[in-house]
Length: 302
Image (cartoon, rainbow, N blue to C red; front, top):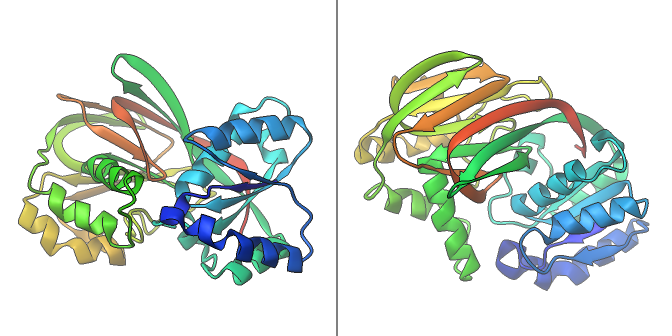
């Protein structure tokens, strides 16, 4: 099964699908391609096709497409999640999940990785959050961001919906949001240890990258059964701008206003609602609870 999101990469998948399908044919893949038409459609497609007997899935799109495929894998009840193998041809704007595994962006090279078929059982996360008064749940396999990260993702996704995407879109909204965002008092429980602080942003990582190449959790291992958590205390906008380089090169954890933890669980409450993103998808608002699901997704890696 090949799940194709034609809108991913601001329509790049739609423009490049003939090339991608030709390369899949060239490498001898036998597959059924299905095209998403709306948000959450990939989840429904995966659930229905698993019932039909499909056990190998390739996601063609961005991190959001992969996230929906993974949610479909968890939400189907036909087989254990680990009986299904998922691979990626990354054609998004962020392309962060593939960075941890060094999977090529070049289509032909990515397809050769899929053909080789080396797999790993990686961890997944599950987060509970709220939309107004309704509690919701989402699975994710790369990284979730709370607070400032959630706001930037929301603005970035809104721009993409309106067809205004480019590789620097996240950075643009990161800088722009600094002038409106205010940190709030936050209560965090990590593995049951509680502390309170004004936090600027919190990252909950399985993989190492988010935001189109920011390496916020550089020590994260996708199969160690732990989240890598980065908690950035309240910063001035000028301090954030001065440290953008650290966000990209993995040295942000050395900043004196940064706390890092590894944990299986994390609970977050705030004095006012703050936003959440997971795998780049804008979700809802606080309070949040995160739990790790070790070795629960079989992925094709390089």
